Length: 207
Image 1 (cartoon, one colour):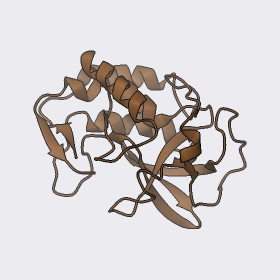
Image 2 (cartoon, rainbow, N blue to C red):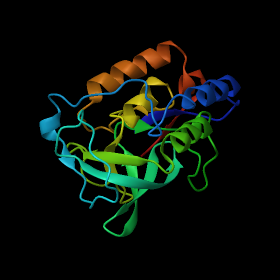
Image 3 (tube, rainbow, N blue to C red):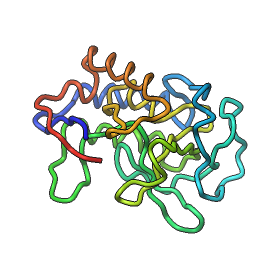
């Protein structure tokens, strides 16, 4: 469980800043900062899917790592689709939670469209690598793979979303490998009033 902000006013300035930022970002080829897996690498696992691309693994990503995978589509600000062993499979980004945009019978929430737009520009048509986190489990209750999503340039997309304030950092009551850095980045984004932290009226949602 985590807090989420309700939709009361558009984030016009955030939309402008996000649009400017994504011109410089991408898996599709820049990030707010490449992350090297260090002491947490031993606890992470490769995704249980056969690669669907022939691109080489970035040197910043020690094994095991799953991929590369071609991104089929972006569902929303924290979920993408890849082909996993011949089936279109949803992948839920570990450690983050975005405002709702596509949940049935739920309103579009403040900050949700900006997070979705960012991820679409960042990942649609791109190639990613996936690390699974045993502390989180392989799949969630909606049968989505739970993973850290890394770009070909060595950028951790989950981390970038937190740093930009487009998501809240959460493990939904479970530990995860990058919790300490995600929490620190989320605290800074909140202090700076970035993204979802500019939205009023927190509400509670599950994964």
